Amino acid sequence: MSKELTFKEKMKLMQIRHREKALIHSFIAFGILAIPFFGSQWFYSADVPSDTRPDNVEYRMSMVGDMMMGRHVHDAAVRSDEHIDRVFNYVSPFFHESDYVTGNFESPILDPNHERYEEPDAPDFATLKSDSELYNKDIHLYAEPWAIEALENAGFDSVSLANNHTLDYGDLSLNDTLEHFADSPIQTLGIGDAINLSEDEREAGAVDAADVSFFDINEDTRVGIIGFTEVRVRGFDAREYVGGVLSFYEITEVRNRIEQAKLSEEEGGGGADIVMVHAHWGDEYQVGYNDNQEEYAQYFTNAGADIIIGHHSHVLEPITTVTSSLDENHKSIVMNSLGNFVFDQGWTRTKESTLAQLDFLDDGSKQLSFIPMTIADSQPRETSGLTKSYQDFRIFRTLRKELENNEWSVEDGRLIIDLDEAGILEGVDLTS
Image (tube, rainbow, N blue to C red; front, side):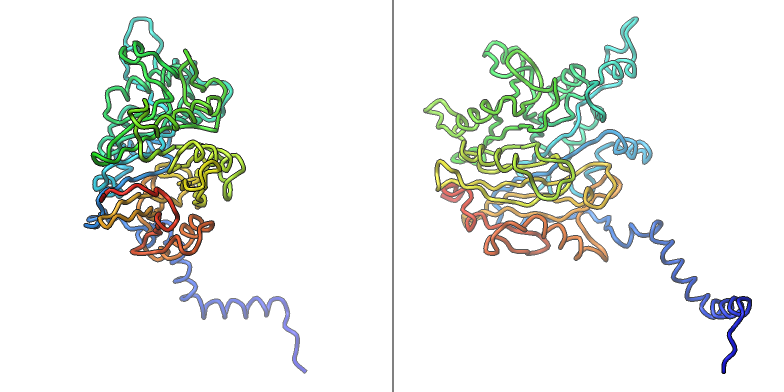
């Protein structure tokens, strides 16, 4: 009969066994501890892509979600002694090789070096900023004018400012934002001095928040794009004689502008063959999308919208197609949320991102593709490294979960939606 070991003997035996495995345990511990220091080299690529556009692409539009260049994103640029355009270091080739680029800009522009602060007895920037904070908000964001330079250098053609942060500092943020973007070639969407401005007011330089911005793909194909926010903060709404952002408070005006954009120029409309809507909507960090998004998507589709670019939730959401209830031959494609693109939030789902590209190919076909991306140190970049397959699976699974199997495929690391198969943009043909 074996003798039962005493507590002291058990501890001694444990020490002997530990010494026998100490070396392998040390290696395991080193590997675990090394991840925070070397993990970025293992899991993320610092390569800048090249030749992002195939020869068969006749025309390409690139679209991204939420961009915020203040707070810790700004601090990271200062710490690294770089311009804020560092945020686009790993993605700018995608934009430079596109014909049109747009996204949501999630903050106002405030200028600490504005000449107003040099006037005698004028309050300093910190004081005026503090006095201008809206009391009915907990989070106040802003970026400095170099953020506009970053957007210009990256190649953006337009940004939507119709969101729940553009007026975080009331009239100060509205006026400064409009003033600085007025000197930029970038078109601002969903923000202005009022809506339904007179011709005299426009000629004087005032901006209508409900304006549709137009651009031509070629001499036969025109696109209109507008910005709108469902996420409303009291005091943000643009109205007649009141500056702000275009919100659901003026939802009828949004419908009217979409319908007018689709009318021919002979009918007094904008002559747009394609209408795109930036929609700031939904609930933050939600899984999927909510009923309001479905209702607004249907509303915009009925008015004639073709492509809806969603943002606000800071996470990716499924892509859906919507058929007009007024015209069964008209369908839109809805990117319910493209997630963050440049942001400083730190948990996994807020760092999963994508860059959407609408391509018109030389054979007359059309497709919408999604490049899987991750955000590291506030910089979006293509997924790569040991976890690329898993990251891509997560991103693509979210985006395509409500699409029919015959509408999508994965090719060359992209999720590709066949818009002809999905019945989107029917009648739009760049080769005709």
